[in-house]
Image 1 (cartoon, helix red, strand yellow):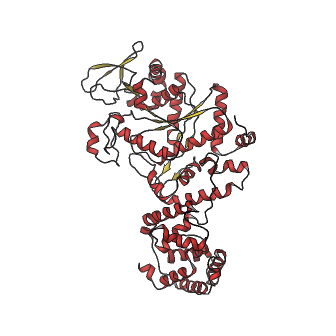
Image 2 (image 1 turned 90 degrees about the vertical axis):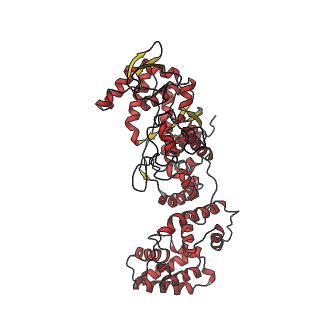
Image 3 (image 1 turned 90 degrees about the horizontal axis):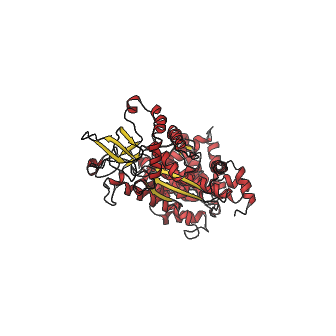
Length: 531
């Protein structure tokens, strides 16, 4: 039983999107009278799993937890793989493509694994997805379409589709081009000869026998097969609806590009005699060129790439924020996501309940965010790596301990983890694009002034970031910069080789006053631009 009634009341009033979605499910239960709630996420393993796939599971999990905060009704989450789908084209980002080519149009679980690790390409991609979801600790049940069709789990629902064939066709045909209307059937027979998933018109339906008759495209002979037992699968919109009907799915979200498909599948689900699930349409992730991320193209970030450069929590934050807004999912979004996560975490304990329920970390950590303080931001660490050319974390810790004497890798494991991420990110993405420039005469005079003032600081002031920041401001004002942004931009471009950077007083306090003075010397002597 839920005992914290105040928390329930606050959750019922929260405007955070997972709670808005959860309230839809409470209303659904009033209509359906069900005693449990089934969440589903779908995955098409025709290509390697990408972050968008993970995002759907992460967001659904957030809605599931929000619902559980308000209700004692038990919930389950099924991650469904449509691995019986025929492989229609070879993905661009896999090896051994010649091995795959003879098996086009076969179910993914019948296509050889180009990586040579699993019994099929479908099994390989399923394993990758499950491994990642397990590493994140998601609670879910995995279901394979191939297994569900072959085992008979879908038999009753498939016979229902056969029975309501005319209603399904009436829903689907208006959505198709005239040429496609002539050949469309919700049933895709699996050829007993070639093993291919065939897209052929149906010549005859035999409801009593539970079979369909089609003309083999190679022999032109009529073939009769059962619609059950894995001898057929459904076209995906009909398949989606059948799955909702067969499993009793209450909630499934999907990308904005599938809005029309959701409408059609919902109509088919209703025609089969079930209420379509509640849903949520999220915007799509885009790559660095603004194009939709594709499994077959392999554009955008992979799950493993994000985790090389940033924490899992920062990735979950990126999934939580503004799900109905299109966002670029590329390497340059990572630093801000990392710093935003720790900013939200630092605010949590000081917030009231309503504010906490709107804080992303409440949803990322299922209502129990950890204690964490971060004396140094990820962005600042990146610039420290840039200035020091650090190759390992021990070099960074030498600077960090001077800035925060009580910090250590053992007392600050999160900061130690961030230091490793910063080194990877800098050397892979920042360093190759750094472009130092020589200062203008006006900038040179200001830099000389800054160096003189830094050299005159007593050692007791070396780590006072605010004092140093005031000095930097004062130099800019006296140096004739009408807009101080131009002064700071010059500091970043001349000293760090990049168009933007950290709060400069904090950077100097972390990197060191004497070290910054030497950095200015190098810039004025042309050593940085020459390098």
